[in-house]
Amino acid sequence: MARQILPLFVLILVLGSCATGKRALEQGNYYEAVTQAIERLRQNPDSKKATATLRDGYSLATKYYTDQITVANNSSDPFRYESIMNSYGSLNALYEAIQRCPACQKIIPNAREYTRQYEQVRMQAAEARYNAAMASLDENNRERSKDAYWNFDRVEQILPGFRDARERREQALDYASLHVVVDVAPVPGRYELSNEFFANKVFQAIDGPAVNRFVRFYSVGEADRLRLDDPDHVLVMQFDDFVVGETHTNRSTETFSRDSVNTGSVKVNGETVPVYSTVEARLSVFTRTVVSRGLLDMRVYDGNTRRVLMQQKMPGEFAWSTQWARYQGDERALNGDQKDLCDLDEAFPPSPQQMFIEFTRPIYDQAVGHIRRFYANY
Image 1 (cartoon, rainbow, N blue to C red):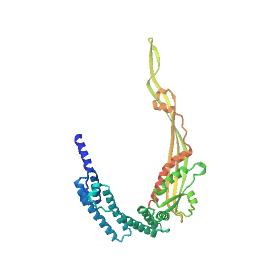
Image 2: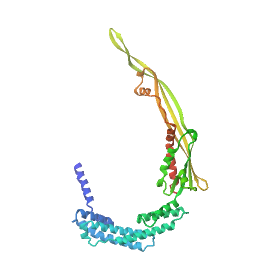
Image 3: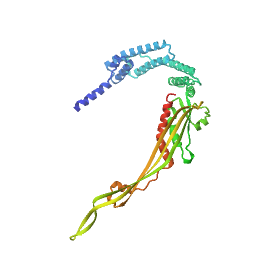
């Protein structure tokens, strides 16, 4: 069976690599038909099927794209030049592919390129987008400024460096953006803890367009430096109802025994005979758990009215524990794990600062999730 499967698999690969474009031509995919035929003729300049496909396909592709250009020219769509540009681009791509194939040049000796037409209509396409963007640019209307941003961005895609589109795009982005100051309140001084790790993690997650291209977040320090006195929103996060280092110690004691343990020897009729008996050990296992937990209160205020737009409370907890044991009696009554536990000493818990960081990790995930969902559609 394996000997039959392998040649069939190889045959499929060969047939796939020998596509002449005939099927694509029959399906009306003229561009694909021509490019497949050209590729086949590069490999086999004498391919009759590819020759026929290229001859017929190029004629049909040229007619199709020129008809598309005529339709677009007669349209009232202000952005019709982009459709025309794309049609000329496809015709130029076919022309360049034929020029890189000697056999194809003989089959289509009069292939035509439209570079001048393409560049002219590209300029018109960029001009149309630029004009639409300038008409939408409005410092007092976020939605119109969003339209302006996307149109300026399209200008940069069509014709990079066109006029001042790049600078105008940044201006439109500023007009379209919601400016949010994020205030992560400090931890109460009595704990001597820093929330810097938590605040940095939150800012890393929401910085840039990850949440929403049109929402910009600023720390309090950044807002002061930029003189952002009237933000659209103020997002306040503060920890309340939390404890760091709550300690619980538990001790459990149990007696273990083991039978048939060699505990010595005796003389019997002049011979030394081993003595087997039951041994016992009283094992005390100590477990110390240090818990840190807290609640983050997050609120979003309207920058002008101070109305609460969103409020969420998010809990977090981290429990650190250590275990060790001591015994009295005969060690041979214990198993391997119990002996290993007796070899351990009580471990010291992480620092309060580290415990604070650990219990804020699950809160961070919740906070970032709420922020992303809340601002996703602004």
